[in-house]
Image (cartoon, rainbow, N blue to C red):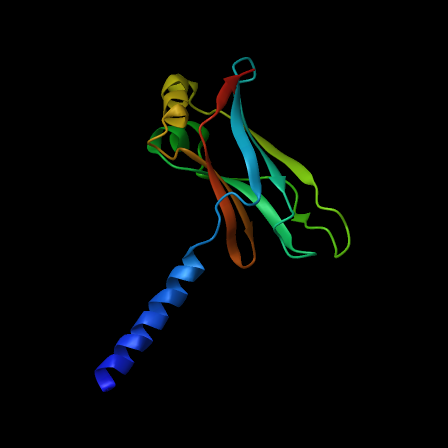
Length: 149
């Protein structure tokens, strides 16, 4: 009897754990991408968000997380925050789509061809848009779209 009780408790624990991990990805991030401006020698990171999945009056920010030595070295950072803190609508207000973006100077433009390849490579996660607040990461989406301005 004790053995089956222990198995039941462990089973319930794992069910709760798996249920907590099973959130729908990209509930907030609708789309995003990177734009390369060759003349200005910049990369603009952008995303379109929807706040309909958030609780009313939830504060949040968008940031872009960069992975890979090439892109981090070329930009001199691995984390790019957008300028403004956002807030979901109050109860009774309609949800909306929000565009966020941040332009960053390229410090090492010699590597731009490799940066473009890394972003486009679907097997890598060179650029991820993350939606965060004081409680941690709310949503994320890996971006593979890059265009030349």
